[in-house]
Amino acid sequence: MGLGLWLRTGLLMAFLTGLLMALGYVLGNEAGLLFAFVFAMVMNFFSYWFSDKIVLSWYRARIVDETEAPELYRMVKALAREAKIPTPKVAIVPTDVPNAFATGRNPKHGVVAVTQGLLRLLDRDELEGVLAHEISHIKNRDILIQTLAAVLAGAIIMVARWAGWMLWLGGLGGRDRDRDAGGVLGAVLLIVLAPIAAMLIQMAISRAREYLADETGARISGKPWALARALEKIEYYVSMKPLRDGNPATAHMFIVNPFRGISFAELFSTHPPTQKRIERLRRIAMEMGIPF
Image (tube, rainbow, N blue to C red):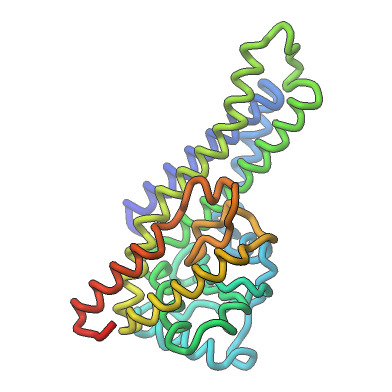
């Protein structure tokens, strides 16, 4: 891992750790701050080494081998060879909502996950386009930061909700709301703003990397038109039937944001507009001399 990626990863972990510690202070003053620091260190350790397993478990994704999904596995293997990276593990997510994501901490430990709905919705070329996009995230080393952001942002959102309930039920950190109105106001602002800050970090990480993964994936598969067609189909489906049983903190990991409606994932979009992605793929196809 290059110095730049180490630096970006370290800054991300430090910032999200700071948010967790601030929430810990809101929950329990100095004792809460200390607990949050220990919790953040444990989260950072497990996020780095086991974040892929955590995210896969959130979606009940199951790793499959070549005997269980021969065509899917062969496609991933061929695209990984074209991308010049080790063959990632392949996982299937048991949901009808079509989508895909990549996870892991580096190309040697990469995982490409696709939903059952995606396998049913797309034809072979379209599926290859999506797989090439996800393999590009692994090749471009996006997966570590994306997965860390998902796990740590998920923890921040969870702790902020706890803090909100504690405030509603009678105060935080032993404060008397009548005696410390300013402290309560600060607590409310932190409880509201901490998850928003975590989502903004995800948005900043994801949007530019999605464009890059689209381009890299189009060149790996040689089928930019297939990826564009797949994006159209997935976007249409999730707009009609969004994912309900999932963690919005992972929205930036999917090829198309699967969460719709009034939520942090929707208010702060982690993805560029699908139509703009398709237009860029059209230009890439022209550069490659491929009919679109």
